[in-house]
Length: 176
Image 1 (tube, rainbow, N blue to C red):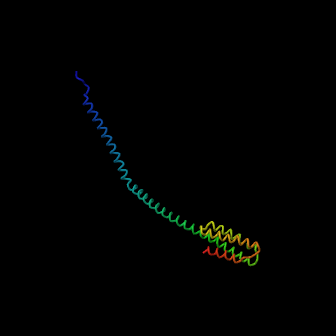
Image 2: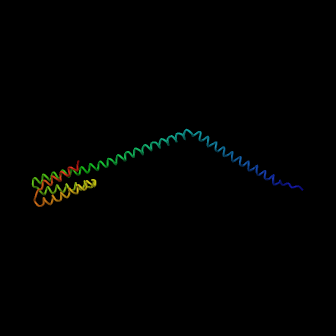
Image 3: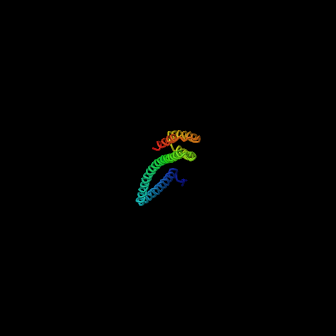
């Protein structure tokens, strides 16, 4: 009796054909999907191009804004430094006015008012010292030392107008 069952070679050949057919169908599906994506891309190409152009423009605007912000920050820093210098000079001007008032009070032999004006001048010098450079702070310390000596001299009943003029000249020299 002959076997009705196919041989091994026939079965393998049939499996190979099934696998080849499956691979062909998968390749066809992938090809159709790629074609569909290509069609979608082709159809949306203008939209994609517009989006790419907008992204490029946004990047350019962002770079320009970053540059402007950096310029504004540099300008703000420069202004802050200038304001500090102006505040320093303003405190020195206030000191100069107080020293001038103290000088008038000493000429009028009103030692109490002169000491009060010198105390206000000293407060203005303290505020200026906080804003000044190291060299300016050292000059302010020297001026304050002269002022302390002057206050002690005034309290003893003498009226050293020349010392007050020296103080005023030193303060005025720092303003320039």
